Amino acid sequence: MISNDFLERIFRKQILALSAYSVADAKDLIKLDAMENPYHWPDTLIDEWLEYIRGAELNRYPDPNASKLVETLRAVNKIPQHAAVLLGNGSDEIIQLLLMALPVGSSVLTPEPGFVMYKQISVSLALNFQSVPLLPDSFELDLPAMLDAITQHQPALIFLAYPHNPTANLFDLQAIEAIIQAAPGLVIMDEAYAPFAEASFMDKLPDMPHLLVMRTVSKLGLAGLRLGFIAGDPAIIEQLNKIRLPYNINILTQMSADFALSNNHVFEAQTAQICTERSKVLEQINQLEGFIAYPSAANFILLRTPTGIADAIFNALKQQGVLIKNLAPNKGLLTDCLRVTIGTPEENIFFIKALKIALNTCKSTPL
Image (cartoon, rainbow, N blue to C red):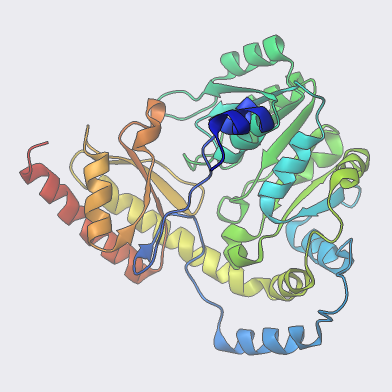
């Protein structure tokens, strides 16, 4: 049995203090917790895909630069021609590469609450992670506080999610531009939910050399492929490429993503359906007594329950077979908050019915 003394001698204290990223077991549940596209591919498209990957040379290493896939990503995402592109095994790997490349002890800045991996990886690399709370209720950037933090910490890198996770809103454009202008280092626009937002900083890359735009195909409907990319100035991407592991994008991911994005009309139709359903679910939640569903530009909705019953609502939903994300334990701005992914029309109807039952159960049961 390994002793704690041994672990403390071998591992950095930052690693020992961390908790592993956990994923809830969704077996036999309606899965509305992970911001996935709920729709399957049409059968005809699956048949074409299987025929397409029949030619995959699994005995050979994949194209280290994924050249064909990069060109498809450029076209679909309207990446400026001057910008270089780097692919990662999901956005997580790209976040890790960005942070690994920073000098020891560098500061990293982001709004709070935010995507957990910004902090998780920063802390694991012994970087100086700093966060600035969003404004209560509106979840907007606290621009004066962000600018003060930039002046004080001189961050080598700033993460801004657009739309934001877990609040699903688009930050004020003027506030973002002020932060980019004030930043002494890199600014990463994490546009994981861009397909649902009709808003992007991609076209601003030519005018802002220290800005990079990061995206993923996960929310679009290809979460199982684990593919993300970042676009920006070639000199910056060149440095990141030095620490990218060779062959990090396997041949099946390269071929499958290229095939899928070449049939992007399928995913555009699914995205439109998700946005339509988002409006319906938002309206229905806001009709429930004591609930607030916040405006969303993503494929999920942040909602606030009546005071003190978020845990009970979450558990009551799970007992009815619906898994969403309980954010209430994070406290702070997320006190009493839950997050639900937009599912199929049938899943959304079931969720709303289950939510009403959960609310009535909580109202009739003393806390």
